[in-house]
Figure 1: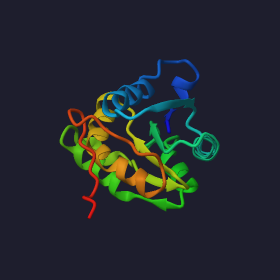
Figure 2: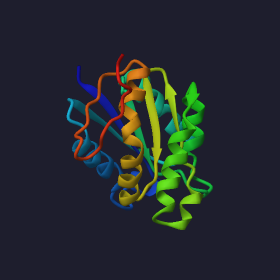
Figure 3: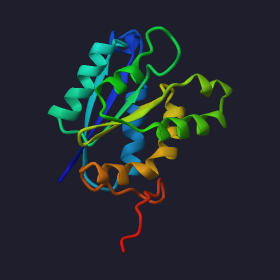
Figure 4: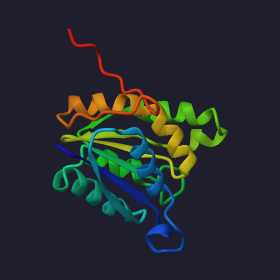
Length: 176
């Protein structure tokens, strides 16, 4: 079974062509290096608009069947930053440990990481993870949380995701 992974860039300016989307490609590039099991990217570039973000996340989870949905952008304190609110609105369960770990890792690099509101949650058989917008921060955060993602996807009924141990060692409890 080929896993579908959703990649959502949330940006008013990138979605209107004012500047190039760097976050979406950065997420795809990192996952391409990390995963060894077959997967297919389903990418979206949308504005910072809560109803649009919610509809996109619902579509990727419910219609496209993405087991993992990664977002970039819209996690700061600015008025238009509403990705965490949209994520919470569409999820049945929140997974606050993801955001806590990402902020902890980001604080090692930049003191303004405390302004980030990344979160994660589960909708059906989809894990949704909000990442920061800067490509280097995306890599730092994915490196921190990816060890837990394959097992989380297992637990919610998704496909078996295998990682390249040279990039990321997925953790799964030992079977008895």
